[in-house]
Image (cartoon, rainbow, N blue to C red; front, side, top):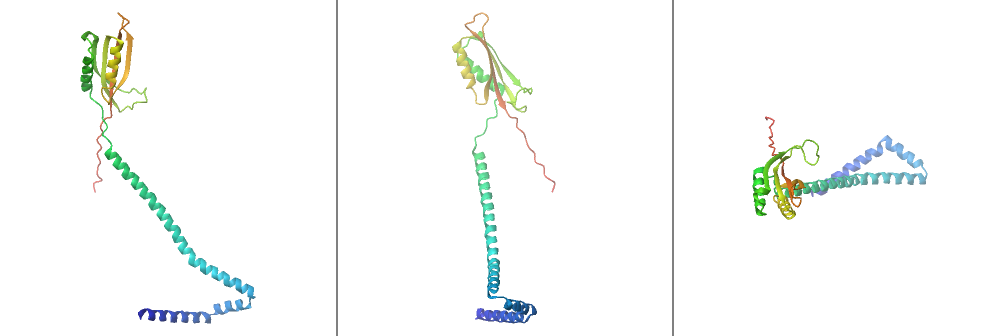
Length: 217
């Protein structure tokens, strides 16, 4: 009932407005010019009016569709980025802790144990000394901030088999320690034996404590 009343009121308003428009001078002038046109020209005017009305009805929805497509692409891009960030967060959380070096004293004990394991005589072991190196700027392989602590192993009059065994044990001794250098030369008294100096270095990145200060608000 209410819908019917509203419909009737709307029709009455449209009829009233249409009557007022027909009585206006502008409408009368346009109608007179239209009547003076040939039938072909009148058809063109009608087609042009229809085209304008169609464009008026079609263009807004078309622009809305284009805007919605842009919004959807932006949403999908942001969703993919968020998924990548979440996956990266999970990967970082699940990553194993990185070993940050071994102390020189602990490395020295491991070296001494390996030397005893291959049965070197006391006179063959010239020394196992703790050392600390620093980058003097000549190397770009190690950053200046990286700590380089390790041991220098000096042995004398070892045969080739003992050299290979000891070198293998030293190299595989600790995951954070690397065999930096090997200085090998024939023994002065007997060139069938060798004097060797190893440098076994453990690399570590210094821990940095980051303090975040508030803005006082």
